[in-house]
Length: 98
Image (spheres, rainbow, N blue to C red):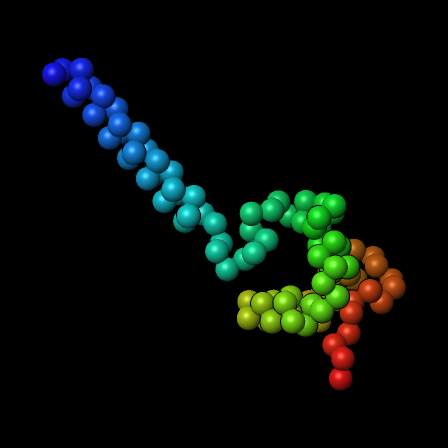
């Protein structure tokens, strides 16, 4: 009888700890940012990061600009400002067709 009680108590504490961990993790992540789970350096310079996404997407006005504008960052101007800060001189931002 005593052994079953100890096992139930351990299971209860384990479940409580798991719930606390899930709540903590869910509160510290920005669910509106699809890049939140990726460290910034990996997103900018990683092999499957920003450059990969841009080269394979080629339509940032459909996916990137709308989200960046909703967050108040700006669309194409936001991309251009980051490229200017990084010292990219060529025009690498795909333009929206008219």
